[in-house]
Length: 386
Image 1 (tube, rainbow, N blue to C red):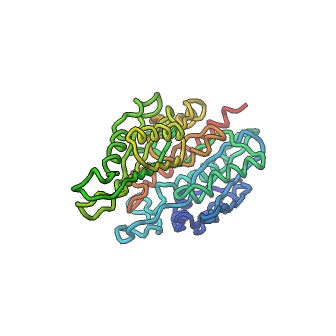
Image 2: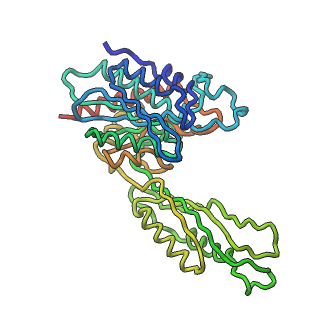
Image 3: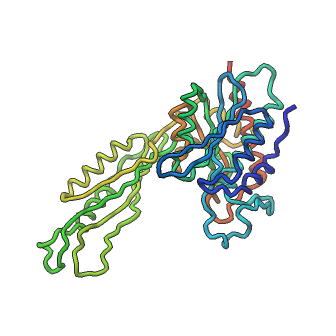
């Protein structure tokens, strides 16, 4: 008989591990022990790259045949910030007034615990003869550089000839009420660093200098003042956010030799990182002069169109909460940006209102309901298989 897993107890055990990226602090040991008790074959995978920290990851699978339904997520968390501002121990996993407090409660250790508890319940209730596999892909690098985590586990799976057929990522997707939002895609993210070079000089003789500030202002006005698009069926309009302007000039009577700026573009599926980099270069060249533009894309925009996976998740949410979730692409990036190249992927997890904040917390009732939803997702997914 399959052992029962209490999602609250497992959530608390995970939160008590101070797994601030890239430190695991025992979180994957806790998770692996619970999964091995359910019969999963667990693979502890440590990856590294030059100039980066080693990262521990876990891929666990139960079953050998297809289809393979994967729960994906992370056990690493962001730093606690000002520990003195917390009203509880950030890693004490205290339950106060029917709410569980601790770093990672919302993002996303409670969802990981709910994965495991839901699988235990599904196995106990599984219909005879039902085929397929269940897997968990859990990284310790989602809140960090995301170099030695999910993307390398996926490469490892490809090398083994192992495939995922559908994936649910347990990121906190709900703004205020459990069951109100599924993420079926994410906007892309491009970071820009712009340096404009000039010639230093006296402000009384500007014709003898080349003022980089004037040209930087023109470039930023073009970048920030030009609407990129009006949005698409599933995406809001792309946005530009200026994040820094730095001249480093402590006096008012000297024209500086250099001016720097930084910005970020969150873009929908009408663009790619390459197309935006070309557009940015064009805007800067129109302002003229010497400049250096550097862009980094942390993820391209992607969409899993509404279909079988989102239908199964939405039906599970309705079954447990009576709510019809919005299919959204809002928010930042997640590891779904890597998984989308391997199988259909969607995201659904806790309420994100306190994620990364002081006194991060979730309702105990939401942990239990999320477990019910994940079990219903498994029921619906495998019931639909031939």
